Image (tube, rainbow, N blue to C red; front, side):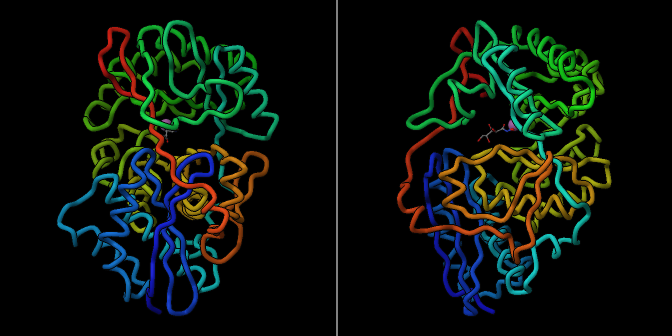
Length: 401
Ligand code: EZ4
Ligand code: CO
């Protein structure tokens, strides 16, 4: 089998998505997600201008060799744009393999290690009472694990919807600016989780995302104060370029730690994993070079009791969500999968076989990934510039969003 053609589709059914389609001489095609929130066109150009010309004519079954060619070949390694482009190619090639062999991708990754994939939902509210209502709503929908974020007076925080409707971090146009204050946040979060546990008891898995806004010692304090509420994890407590920062957190709390949604290679997590400073690795397929690389990362993490918790926000397309569910079904050290449902418009552009039932998701048994792209419908939603917000402290200093 040979790759005969490949092209990039950019569509914006509510938000922007970059999809790579790879065609072969046997009529089988594969889809890969290359979406990098706020930097979509850079990945599209990287693919169209620099990657596609190098893969036409190759055997799509050679996923390892093509991955190494695209990683080592350009000399310039890693980085989110490069790794999302490699991810798009790799995901599409595994889709082709599955279709050619007439089997779902999870069977190529080791087969089913479990029947269903535990997912967590997002609940949020402008204050604690509204957040509690949203937790109740998601529990009612069948979720067994819920991430809870809530607003409070005096500054903004991460993960709270502006008005009615679902939370969507990116906004059309140039980056909006938000205000951030650490101290009121640190006082607020333990109160929030005390109320959640009081109302919903111990059975529900609870999670919280700090979104890289704390220093290690501040995260240590928060983790310690959250211990009575038994969180499944505290996510992205501190920026992770300084991996040793997590040692400080670990020295102060037994609240489990998850990190990695912005990582793009195994090296971003190397010290975190081998020193057992984290409990969950959140890197997902599109942003870290696809199945070929993420399987190595998961296998490495398994040696250190670190489980997977793949990123699953709406800025990852249904192609990545399908891919993640095959991955989650197969890897032994799966932990949990983030689930932020896509809009109806997005689901219509990307028809798929994956399903949700009783707090779990299932990749379906269609050959390959079981996801498609309706190109005619996609063409009705052209690219629209959209960026994530930036954060400033109350005195105007730029800080992490
Ligand atoms: O803000 O993916 O856990 N999920 C998250 C996400 C991120 C977005 C950024 O593009 O933190 O919602
Ligand atoms: Co997050």
